[in-house]
Length: 245
Image: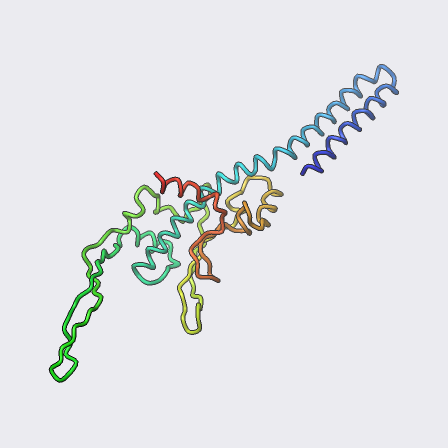
């Protein structure tokens, strides 16, 4: 970027002196017309330099605003999937069913206690044993965990008419033991539609670091047992601030 900027500036300076030489070498009656034409070219080159510098900056500002809204929805989907697995034992790839689950289902509130009992070990000999007992003491609506969150529209990609792609599957953690997994994602091009297509192409090739890695914004994985997203920690700053309040 810096090299390109310097090249543009040096080019304008060289063009200015060439233009000045041309103007001084033509008849006076044509100098005004040629001068105006050459100044228009210089102004155009100056605008291109400005675009070359400010274009990526403006793109990144708009991108971060769009991404933040999309990531909020992905976090909501993740929380819903985790709640669904806690209650039912597995994730789901049915978006409507997941929304309905939040609206109608409940978590069991349990209490764990140790219970002492007598065990006849034979021959009239009694032994004292202890066992763990789990009691259900009540229920808590799942929707209570989503208070103030628009979970009914969480599958709509903010700023678009598109829907997140949701899939589930199983990953074999160890031989013979399979774990339920899920993934929700959307193509970056869908989120960034309307912005500079060259910058969008570069964004889809991002390798990580301070940027969202890959061509998609996603949470979960169909290849690994994880429920995290592929965005950098900077997009989770608001979550940490909310916890501190």
